[in-house]
Length: 457
Image (cartoon, rainbow, N blue to C red; front, side, top):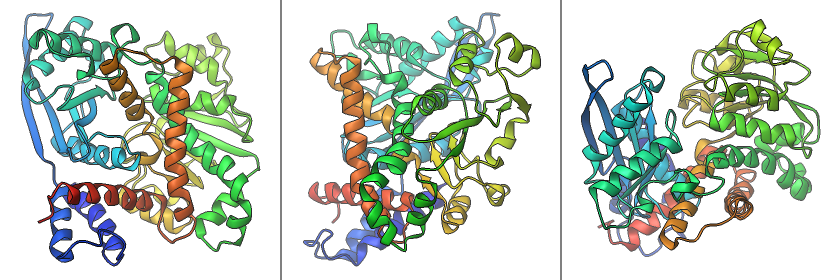
């Protein structure tokens, strides 16, 4: 993992080293770039603890938990807390690193952080989850706070857990500002309207803007370009498309619903999957009906013929992991990391991949697919809606004035459009993949801030 982050940073710095317009006042560029590489490729701090939690049956468990703080040059550390049995130290370090780059790319004044608790939340009662959430805050209370490190929901956690955690923070810090200590809270507890849907809406918007809005406005320029990714984009523009969505949780289901209702692009979702099953219908799936089913089935998709019939959903049941290699044009990944990797990358048929999850495409697969002209909208570009609206929530909490839902979405789309308009012209004009373009822009901004703060000597 450490080697992977160093490679990302080094490739970005190598692209900037010969650019005389980048930090022209540097007197010793070689030494300064070595400092940048060291600063950006390693986390500032890693905090670890075992949460000792009494369970309903009288036993006591010790649950590993983490908080990684990568870099705070842009502002307080910011990142979710993941509740999942696969959480480990390397994972939270990598995700904190990606949060740093994501915030820098979108000009959000936060640094990068990430937390994790090694549990399967489905195996614990509500009371036990409440205790686990509160214990996490009490164990890490010295390193989190509205101006230090601001956690948010992630996989396995949501507004309920953030409400519990904020309540514990308030209890430990009586008389101090607490609304900004956590984001992703319920609206009644100072959360922002639109926060739950923000990531999924942003994920779909990046795809729609790239394939419709941007192409429509720049079709003549793209037609004249010999850029490999421009050719792929034009091949798919304004033609019927088949789409598959991996992961039908908060991000995947919202993005799928956005696609279902969008008439600017002629597409249909023919497959969706979750932790149990893939559902397939070549004529298109009824996304609203699937969402209604998950609401009363612990978030799970129908996985038997009886369940499909009771929900009046027409679909063929397939094996869970087959989705990424189905014959589709567009693949939206909203599950776990490393879903496309060395073993299956050559079987991927999609020509556009949208990363709703964090790091769902392994580096080797990313390079291989990019060389084939596959357009990959990377995680730090596509799934930033959550942290952008978290920033709005943080601001609203400080001002104790709250936006209506329409205003939140307007601000979100404006922010993501600003980033896309900055990135896409360069993407279609040079040989770098979109991910590398995003990394270069993020590293440029971070490096400039670090230089202005006097940290490159």
